[in-house]
Amino acid sequence: MSAKTLTEKLAVLADAAKYDASCASSGTTRRHSTPQGGLGSTEGSGICHAYAPDGRCISLLKILMTNFCVYDCVYCVNRVSSNVERARFTPEEVVWLTIEFYRRNYIEGLFLSSGIIRSPDDTMSDMIRIARDLRQKQNFRGYIHLKTIPNASAALVEEAGLYADRLSINIELPSDRSLESYAPEKKPAAIRRSMADLRIKMEEHGEPTLRTKRKKRFVPAGQSTQMIIGADGSSDHRILQRSAGLYSGYGLRRVYYSAFSPIPDASAKLPLLKPPLMREHRLYQADWLLRFYGFGVDEILQGAPQGMLDIRMDPKLAWALRNRHLFPVDVNRADRSMLLRVPGFGSRTVSRVLQARRRMTLRYGDLLRIGARMNLAKPFVVVPDWLPSKLIEDSNLEARFLGQPKQMDLFA
Image 1 (cartoon, helix red, strand yellow):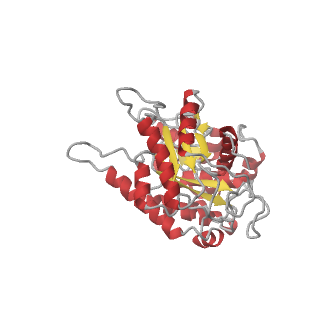
Image 2: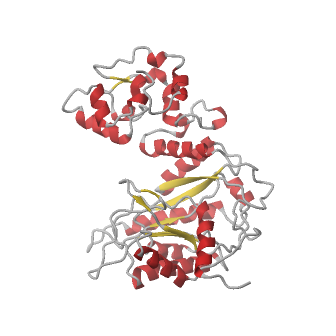
Image 3: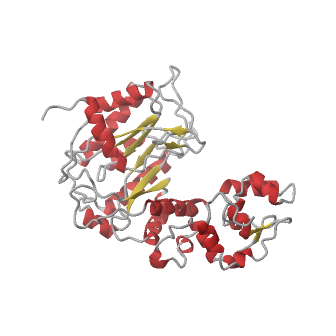
């Protein structure tokens, strides 16, 4: 077989990277340039063809270093037994591509993952070399996210953290039993140990010293992970329980959910059909409730058949409809925790409500100006010029929400 050109490698390895959802970069800050300046030094952070917290659409060069792999994970299109076209970048090629893509203003950083070649440590060493050369030889100050290699040594993972803005290691599947069955070379305990070690190192590097407020810059955007949804029989309750444990136990910045996509020559263990993409979307919404809205897993899945989220509506609205006895709430009196549970009230809206009501009594028009989605919130709130009357007790309330477009006022 003839050697591939760089363009051919890029086509293969960019396509192979599309299955990894965990390429967001929210949470990092500017890498301070040297007096000579620095390539890619931008404000904030970037993610692959998505939106940053400030609304900017930004992108990363998202590739695999190689899709050769010595592992045989049955859910992975790049497994050793898979009949796919293979390619491999050298470290120098990845560095060149990153710099050239940046110079052309295509990207603001790099998301780099890899199949495992030779050994986990060899592969991790090559990825570190890429990040080190970008930082030290090319003076690159853009965003770098490295996917750490399972079973790589703790020393190598720590070194990677000196050059990367974010590190991640995929938990892969929601249960240990599934991972052991589908990916026998990967050990759940080893993955968790790597996460714990990384959290400890981040805390150590963040401690103040006598000379400086903080030690060396180390993984400023934290660590993340990804779970494949729908490849095994795990319920949404089980998935969210695992996520809650990862957030509390390992300080993860994000858990990403990736709907299983059927692959060529698939194992009989895998389902024939992919799960509905709306299930992935509802899991992200539920995850948001866990992290920012004070909900517990059992609350979100309260009364859910077979522990599955209702894909017809967002989980906060579903919770509110199951707990109508708590509504309507007085917007001018309710505390923050209760306001966060009102459908149509986001965390920013709640902050604005709390700030505004110190100066005035809020009315319906004020809530609209603040940014509340009153087409959702109407049955659940009280203000002086709006009383929901019997709306909250309407037996057809759920049907009304499900039967109308979101932008329409259901209660006009």
